Amino acid sequence: MTWLTRPSLADRLSADALPAGLALSTVPGEALIPVAANEHETLLELSSTTLASTGIRSGDRVLVSLNNDGDLAGAFLAFALARLGATATCVDPRGRMRLLAVLRALKPRVWITTPQGALDFLARLYLEFNVDPMELDLELIVVVGEIAPAGAHRRIEDEFESDVADLYCDPFFGAALAARRSGRVSLPDPTTLGLARVAEDEDEKAALGDPIPGLAELVIRPSWCAPLAGTTLRTGQLTGAAGTGLFQHTIGEHVLARGRWISLPMLRKALARIDGMVGWRIELSRGDGSLDHVRIVLGFERPSLVENPMWMGRAREAIAAVTPLGFEVDAELAESHEEATRSGRPGRVDDARGHHLGIERTGFSHAQGGAA
Image: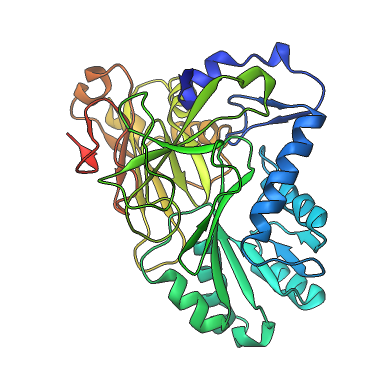
């Protein structure tokens, strides 16, 4: 059994060997993951079974407000819902007025969104649209793709007067592999989704949803994907004995913000072309707002570059080329090259949310759930 992280997966898969079918990527421009037509059918069937365990029924009207950038997440779930017998449509999560218009037109019983997207929409209903959320008659809200803060589920339930369920979609294929509702975890295919020790290529014996000591990493065994048969894919998502959602932390070279994965290797490659820059860091926070705030601070070796708008413009273009997320970009004078030269990999993550526990798995304390 070969164990792969996201960077090693990118090294393993070649775009020249892609068969006919879909080529998926949760980070556009990184690894393209092949899904043949018959494999796509397998994923749809598995996802339909998982979606049914959240309480979605044949005949339901369902609105999916998830993006379709690279991984086709929103459209894929809509197809899986149609296979289940539901009437489903997908709308881009950006643009809350459009979202409200579609909700009023479709009149869905079920809404699938990210937890922070639901909270942000809730705030806008009150502050901008003067709409009582109960007027939307949503009976079930399924949240997916983010680490929700404590109390988020209860607030969504109370404000919308609806049930809330968690859905887990894997970060490689976007397939719905697990769900949780009323404290009960549903895992249609336990051989596909498992737990592993964070710093070791070793399976955890506990099943998803069972109490485990410390933290364990969710891993995927993609038996349906011929090029990846016999491999175990590390998701970078960590789960513990208790918490909101089906995972509570992340680790590794990919950082989760606003339901999107930020690839540090791709950022390093893009920003390496900016002359005079010797280091950078990503700052993530949530604060009083409902959406993640993402800021990148660039460290330049000369004061003239810090104040140069052309250099900042080049940096913004480089960042936009590797992620659809909007970054706030600032610059400062780098007092030391230590951070850039210590590991040979510039870039640091400062996560005030407490979600991302580190870039390196080596030395991770499994029992305590932190870096040693």
